[in-house]
Amino acid sequence: MSAGAAPAPLHGIRVLDFTHAAAGPFTTMWLADMGAEVLKVEKPGRGDGSRFMGESMDGTPNSDYYSSINHNKRDILINLQAPAGVALARRLAATSDVVVQNFRPGVMERLGLGFDALAPLRPGLVYCSISAFGTTGPWRDRPANDIIMQGVTGLMSLTGEPDGDPVRAGTPVCDYATGLFGLASILAALFARDGHPAGQHVQVNMFDSTIAMMANYIPTVLSLGRTLTRQGRGHAQLVPYQAFRCGDGEYLIVGAFTDAFWRRLCDVVGLPFLLSDPRFTTNAARVANREALIPEFERAFATRPRQEWQSLLEAVDVPTTPVFTLAQALATEQAAANGTVVELPGSDPRLFTVGLPVRSEEWPQPPRRRPPSMGADTAAVLEGWLGMNNAEIADLVATEVVGLEG
Image (cartoon, rainbow, N blue to C red; front, side, top):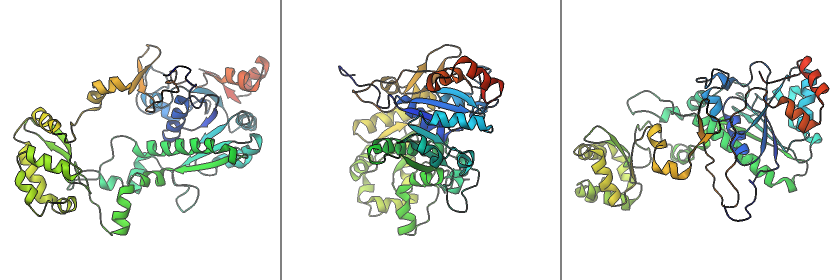
């Protein structure tokens, strides 16, 4: 960080977070990591359902899943089914710069917590709604989650071996892509607040976000009329661009996505005759004739162990890497150099999470706090944000409008 570095870019921004599960909390986690004060609102009793997804970290409702995407936040328990709870949420919104929610369309409006209800309370309010299918169309009220989206968008149809079953991607890519689009929309709206003094309502949905990740295939399907099929370890538009099994049974990825890489690859693996074969002279030709081409490389890579091939390819600057497990990837020198993963304070148990992937010399990496337990900050927030005294807070607890930790 340079001398006189500025604070984190979202320092001073207050976020009221009504999100749960994955896509919404992923959005607000990055807001928190960029310096915003994020207050997570949960239902007394059970809280965010993701607390019970995966495995408990410490015998409490703090699962590994929940802990992975909720660090650096504060937490308050509010009963939004009680009119006094809604009134309290409105007061908190009036002190906030951003509201984020991912309930089904219409839920927040019925509660009196939609954008139109809150915008008059806070000039310049940025309100982000995250939903499954959007607020229009015949599917708007359908329940959905990541695996539903992988299926309904066509993503799962492209994942798996050519002669095998459709396969779910190994991480909730639809949730996380939607979360990143949510983050982008909020940052853009904050940037544009001077031109939108009344604030604005930005909306993101999982269906559109997932299809946006397949942008490279849209012209293929709609303009060229092609039918895409599963390519397993390969790529529908690039050849050779896949993992090959080497002589020791380990897999090595080769990404020869330019003609220069293609020529070097053929020379290194001992297949220079392929360069003059008209079936393979262009990438389009190689895609059309992959069934004839790929076996040539499979036989070649089977003749040596992975490390030998990796060294040979790296020596001529052909993109290549072993297929790592996640644990192996996290143990690499590159992950250590980047600070890809960080350990949060405390030791019972040790807790690791992703670091902020964005770097700037002008603002520091954020301080790290563990994910909050349910209601951990209820009293402190009511006092600090709304100026309530102990008697007022005790009355809200007694009438079950809010809940305290434990």
